[in-house]
Length: 286
Image (cartoon, rainbow, N blue to C red; front, side, top):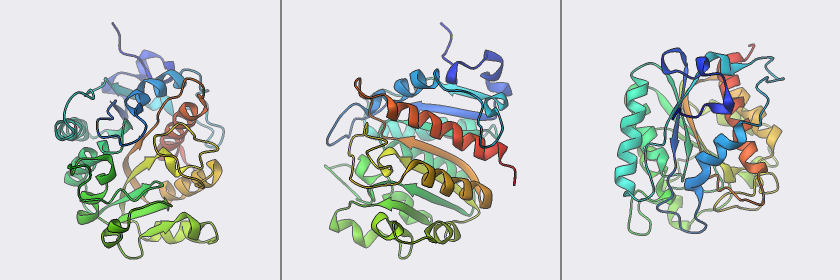
């Protein structure tokens, strides 16, 4: 049986040798502490992608023609978080060694731990742009350092970690925040210069990690831990476009899509966001 292609693109644009982009699917939600189901996110993502137009108006481009190779699901939720993170790390490292642009669709946010480990070994002067409603800075949670609530703790010890859209955290996480590098939504809501300020704090090479709950739940309700408030669609795109313009984005992940049979707009939002990021990576006219 043939592997599915992203958005149903012709197979000639989906083979490894001719693809600039690698899409790694990680259907995992073993450590979820509220609503389960993000392990079904990658499947819902691929299903929604088949209904997306492949021409991007903003960049006047069809970025899929640069090739998108899908790595079949590399884990399942029956394995331990530690084993999952190791598998993500090994898979990312494999394709980074081929000089591909490596991307991920989750799954819960703990998948980011393995991905960031692999990117950190390849790229010097790297920072993390973490877009989320939550800080995810617990060193350990529910007895595990690999819980989704710990997804950014290790990264915070190794790299500049710029956190955007935060509006929920535990008081124990405050001591792990990097001073000046967090952009709470209640502050950026009233600061017209927050985008420039955040970008100035990023280093040359940037890995982006986007939790879907960074968006206002009015446009992205299908996620495991939705929080009131959050970013709008076009404000998010404006910011990300600036990041791609001014920095070298080396890879990204999008996590915490929790499909809902009664609501498919979030699935489609994730697909459009993914495709926008690729379009910004390759097709921006600077």
